[in-house]
Image (tube, rainbow, N blue to C red; front, side, top):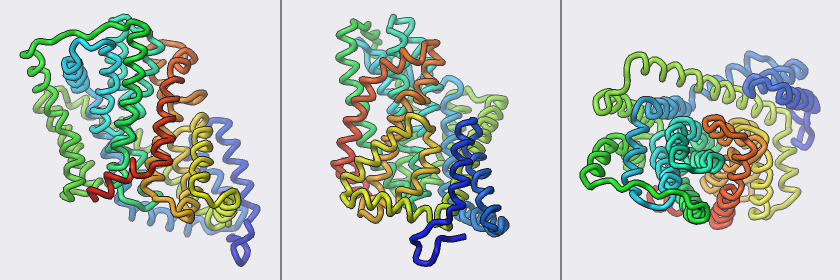
Length: 436
């Protein structure tokens, strides 16, 4: 089953499931099922005992407490996206901006940063806040392709600023601190927001987008008090982690409980039917992710046992032993793959193959994790796949091509941030090293 003695040879049976995996992608079989089917073929052709594989994988999954954080963060995102919580947040930021030129476009950026500190989900941002944002921007006379593009671009901040589901998955794969990854994502997320905000200043003047509405002092404080319970969510979640009171997984449970309480008692928007719907959606979304997790564990076992992992590592190291050039190759590769595949595919299929190479080159795993998450989020607004663009264009009722065209300058600015954090690691590692 394994490569020949010395580890230099690869079991060529492994190429059969790799081909089959590619075929499964083409015929649109779900990624988790594709990996399981493809690896099952390898086990059958290699004569591997499936019982041993099942026992090994399940014991590894059960031993990973980090996995529990994923459904908890998904649940929190679904609670915060339901009812009037998003409307209260929207009105609060609107009052905060006042008569600023292009206020609703600026609002799109600010509220995405605030909301990301509660959910860690790009899809929750685009689909939850996106509906309100796009309706308001349409009423105010904004170009809808631009409105959809800025909604898609700002939604990418969700998984970069803590908490972050992709970072939880990376932490599990790379065996690193979730807390450090969360801290490492703060500065890049803020930089992306600043760059996008500068673009909004320019485009608002160029296209003469409308100014915001001035709120009275009494109205401002009224909306602030309404938003306050929701604004405490990231403080409780992140404060618990960085004071050492709770782990990231426990913080997820705490945030889930807190969002239930404020939705029932502070906002009075969570009914029994709504709560059951949130649970159902959480189970479905978690099931999709966990099916990919199981498939990824199987694929990782195949790569290790067949010697394929060593072949790929040797190939990368044969290209260069310069960490900066390797990071450039990695960024280009993940950007190209991000145009074609979903984030889950990139994390579970490709990360296990490149993490050992990065470690061999002495690259900081926290730095690498944040760079790759930012990279994958940029891919989510880049054609031809661009899942966030598809979500936003669907809500706006605009052609995907028009939204992609408006998103390209924003993607360019995000790439500048990616270049900065790739070759200036302290931008990412400063906060983790200082606070943890």
